[in-house]
Amino acid sequence: MTELSTLILDRIRDVPDYPKPGVVFKDITPLLADPIAMAAVVDELAGAHEADKIVGIEARGFILAAPAAYRAGAGFVPVRKKGKLPSATLEESYDLEYGSATIEVHRDAFAPGDRVLIVDDVLATGGTAKAAVELVERAGAEVVGVAVLMELGFLKGRERLTGIDVRSLVVV
Image 1 (cartoon, rainbow, N blue to C red):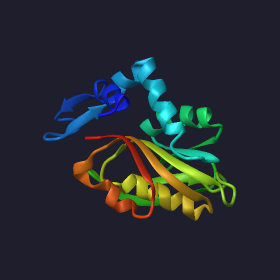
Image 2 (spheres, rainbow, N blue to C red):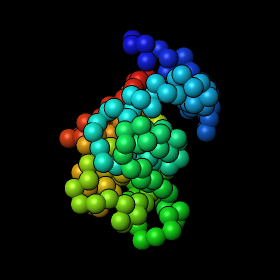
Image 3 (cartoon, helix red, strand yellow):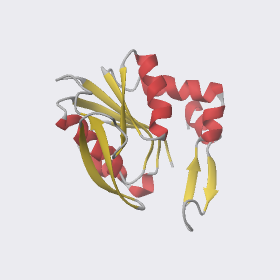
Image 4 (tube, rainbow, N blue to C red):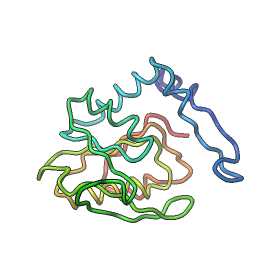
């Protein structure tokens, strides 16, 4: 295990039976509260790929993607739940562990050919990340990769992202 992996895993709290019985929620708030751990995570995510824009997926993805975009000298683009963006959008629906959802991005968020890194906190079943990839590509930009703080390997979300470079700082 790397020093960064240990730093991250020591600061992720397991919350049993949340949001429903049988689920062990991975709470990243202790990691976010630690300035050394947070800086290390942001630095690693910012260096994952050279990109013009970094997408953050609502909501915890915003917390990681915005400072990573700043650190990388890239623009930040929010991908939000349906109905939260004020201008014309593209939308994509997908299935996730607990149901289904729809995410959106502004139609004008990307210039043609923009190189885009998608950042989120967790890669679980891959539904949200796959929907974000679809949105970015439909908007005319190129996805250079997906970078996540934590991958829940047992859910095999990576398999839904065939052809996409996926980088996880830790796999649990």
